[in-house]
Length: 310
Image (cartoon, rainbow, N blue to C red; front, side, top):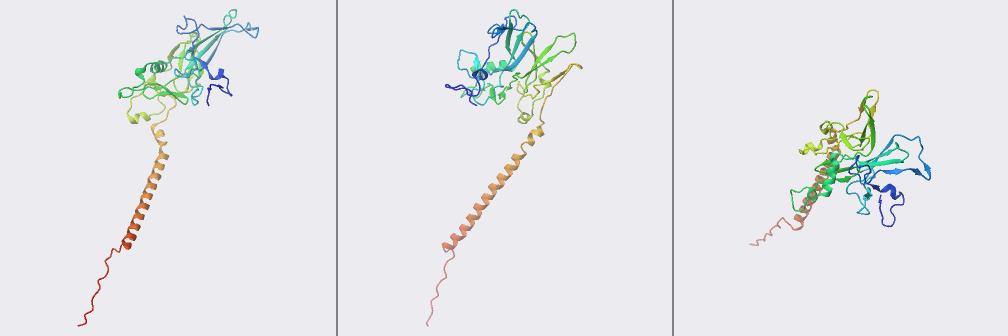
């Protein structure tokens, strides 16, 4: 689907759906990197906010990538699916928090990107030319991440954990405060600070999560820094047992190799077909040779004997 045109952005979706801002909103004490303070909503269409609103609302969504298309280079608003192949839900996760605690001032909207280590690697490789490979220099490798369907991958570095899908609130005891996880299908969950929205820590060690398959081990390649981990974007927390349940999906090497069995049969059929063609060519050459021998009178003619009249 083409999401951008000079004459008509899109006749199916409004531009507000296809474009998204990567700007962060927040107070300096909470988020020193915020480009703007929180947005304030006091009323809508002349109607004030209900006086009994309280607490907070959290929203999460994808906000494109560092190299997503910008119609204005001075703007931080991107068109994530401008290339026509990248889904809208592939991109860095952004957490939005609506604060209803001080209604006299209005509801406050804060926003902050989720920044796992791979986020900083993505930023660095797309801004620093020394990480982008160089023609004529065999030692220079392109480390940049590129969109590939619903994932974002760098061959030498691995797969991005974009953390843009869902939340999981946790509370392991009555004495503890509530904690909040953000999740994605292709990566381990991360905990964030519910107030500042800062990315805090991943769930489990990197070594405790298995990659989705072990094909790379066949080529004796070193493990990439950012492993391809297949997890669940919707884990579960049991408030009675205080346990979190999730999955770490993987495929055994034998299971992966079994996918190549049809290719083996196809290869055998192809080889048999080539042999058959060679046999046909050989038979034609032999038949033609016999005909040529007869046409050129290969066998010498008989000698004529003179009759003696003496």
